[in-house]
Length: 220
Image 1 (cartoon, helix red, strand yellow):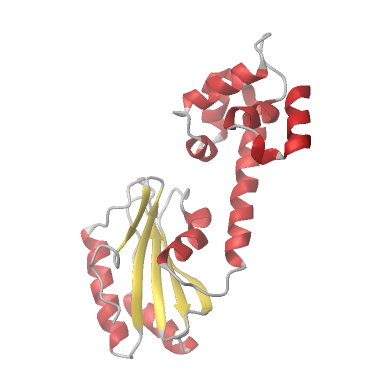
Image 2 (tube, rainbow, N blue to C red):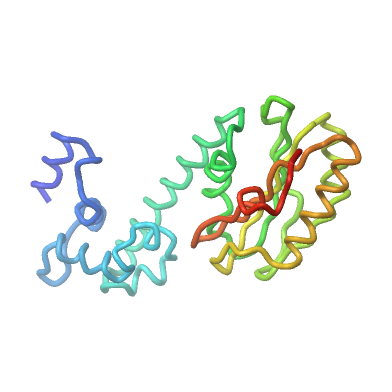
């Protein structure tokens, strides 16, 4: 432990490897096992991916590598702090340049939800954010979105552009037939009022899907 704290103090947390960071969170080893070895086994239990470890709930963390409840809670708390920091930093943005900016804005908030949420991002003609609005919340397999209400809110805000964002709890970002139909209907309805649907983004644990990038949407 002393060696790791000295390394962090001298060179900063960014100098520590994933296993070393985990070792510091775990504290003491288990049954005489060095903490670095325990951290390595824990990381291996999640395929060596900190991202998967950070999404795990306390029950799964507790069983993985036999780390126990206290250590599992410590890791879950650290992961949640990281998510909240990312969410807070994203919320500070007042302008959108690309779809990647939107993904960074929403991923910390909706990626790990166990149900679907759909949000609309309303923009000015210069891509300044007017409002982020949750327009629907549903179940594991879908949520109902009324495209007329999405356009109605855009008119109330005098928004000239909008982006639709929702998550897939299943883990895959591939759009469903319902997602495609919603995109078509919303784009047509918005165009009647000279409002552009810039993109429809699906965020999931395994990646993201952009209707614009896949040629399924023409925002002009």
